[in-house]
Image 1 (cartoon, rainbow, N blue to C red):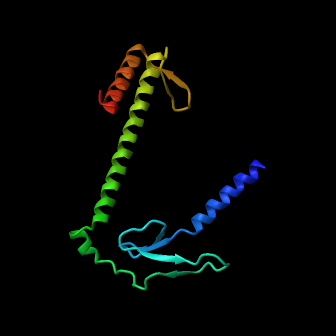
Image 2 (cartoon, rainbow, N blue to C red):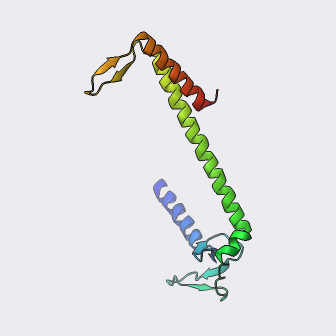
Image 3 (cartoon, rainbow, N blue to C red):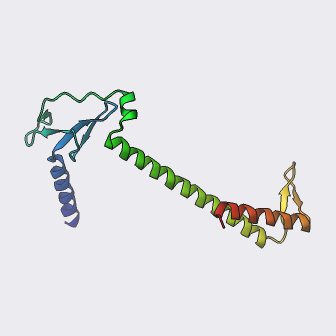
Length: 154
């Protein structure tokens, strides 16, 4: 019985979502976009409710706006262009911070592993282990510490 109640609730949500107004807009590149939230310059599209017809009729018959030439947009960016640029800049900044954090973690892990290892080796041309001398091991640890400090900034 409980499953039927959940299914009925989900169905009612789907029906109410199907009755929502739909807005049509054209972006600066001429791409048509549909959304359930109004945006500046969007036109309302009424969806026929009830019955078994699902065709839509536009509320207005305005033709889609023609995008300005590329040169005009570059010299006079629209507010949406400015917002898009800011969003892209934030995304790049977050990606850079994530990359730096990953590099710091890897460098720290490598350094910690070198401290915990009794012996450090490098792989030879045939895949065999060539163990480092004590002086080479100390130098490798110093190199790994320097790499960690460069990656982590401390």
